[in-house]
Amino acid sequence: MFLFLTVIQALIAAALVGVILMQKSEGGGLGVGGSPSGLMSARGAANFLTRATAILAVLFVVLSIVLAALAVDVTTGRDIDTSLERGAAPAAPTQPADPLSGGANPGAAPGEANGGSAPEPADDPLSGAAQQ
Image (cartoon, rainbow, N blue to C red):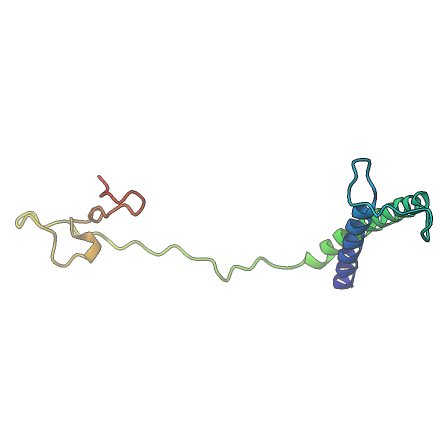
């Protein structure tokens, strides 16, 4: 039912846009200026397009309200999907530098070459210069 009303809403919206664009505005617009020899006079076409616009606009608003009410019923009761939630990983303990050798502990991880401090500054991809 919800999908059916959504399709009807889209069709009414397209028809409303079409009817509005066909109306002749005072600035010229995309009007279909009719001649009196046509099926409908210019005044009759204007009255028809004005009525069609009003009817389509009312249908559009009513369907919007109905769809909003249906959407509340459709979406209630669902749980939030937490399948992509990441847990905090435990931090690895840092190993201090060996004070006798003056260098990093040989058993330290590759990113901890300076005794647990931040890695060497890399080139800045935006400016092309090394970070200070």
